[in-house]
Length: 238
Image 1 (cartoon, rainbow, N blue to C red):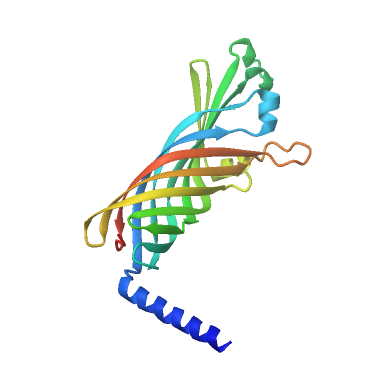
Image 2 (cartoon, helix red, strand yellow):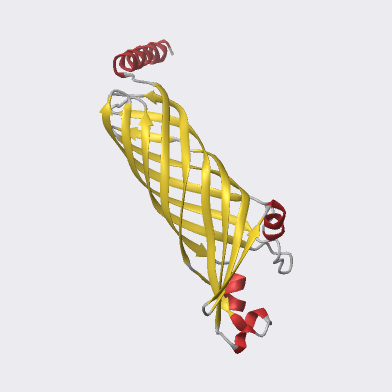
């Protein structure tokens, strides 16, 4: 037991010494502009009964990540970051006109529609820093403040603005949950200041309020693939 205590004490002293020598721990702030391609993921019920297919959309936003970075060794650090921002996201799809029972099938085989949301984004994104690379895995929620429904049949397009009440009638609860993974690289041009270039993969999910099939919950999804360009304040551990 005494030997174990001495070993633990020795390891602790060495760890403290290493951190004191290498540490560049401190506040970290990143301002990002994400540019993404979103792919609508339709529920199986709509695929089977309405021939629904997810479509591609292009979205963006602006986010701020801030928190604290702790350096663990000469080239390894961990950042605990909160993420806040504005996000524009679109659920886009097409389906068989005959599934709508509206007579549209007399003129067209398919109907395209998209729900776009302008949302407040709130989440957490811990990152593992290896030199000037950072790998992040996190998630949170997006709260739509307003939106738009666009329906397109042949060359005819109809657009309807959506408020919070309208959104609450479409998805319930009136939020989108999201998860994301990111890979960033920081190019430092001054002490503690850098350009950030990154790639990320995300998934948004929302529960459909209008569809309740035998008590089964129906969900829409958006698979996001994008790039992030930004500015970073924080120490380099390269």
